Image (cartoon, rainbow, N blue to C red; front, side, top):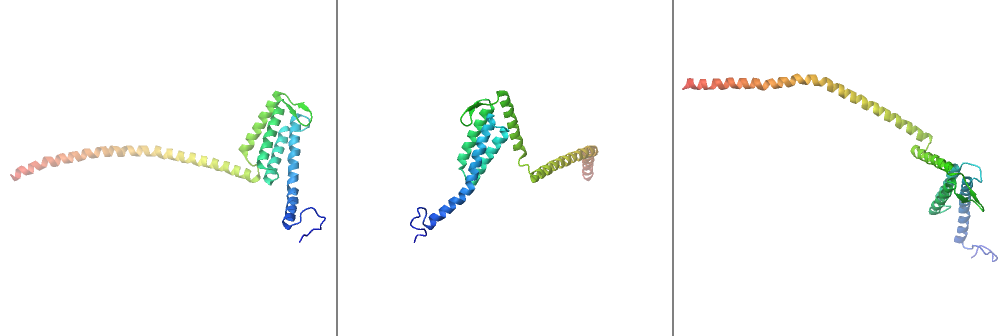
Length: 209
């Protein structure tokens, strides 16, 4: 039996009504993320083109981050996010390189090539620094400090053990030399004793005969 009057032209069945509720619930989550991604993307292009005040690198980072968040939440497809990020990065790089970029309806010229090269170098350096440092949280900083101290302690202990080993080796070398001389003299004593016994044995044999 239908749960809606005859004049109702929308969903009637329980499954269709549930799908309507699900779509509304997902729209509340997805729509703000899509809007933020579009807004920040257009802002990054305008800042890079010079029609809006701000730092182009920061605007680009904010736009890329918003696209990543939208893809993670399921507001847009991950491939669509990657495609938009690639297009936005190319457009911003072209704008910083002094090329003509179409922001909205008119084409504007951006900064010169020297300034663009300088901005690109700083952006690359910042990216490398961020990758090297990783997440700069309190826990990450504490782990980095602990690893530095651990490396320093390990280096100190290794140096101390090497010094001890060198000292012990230097002390042991003079003590081993007399032992080698004594060992060299022992076979000579044995040879003289053998000669003496060999000389005595024939004499005893002659006496018996």
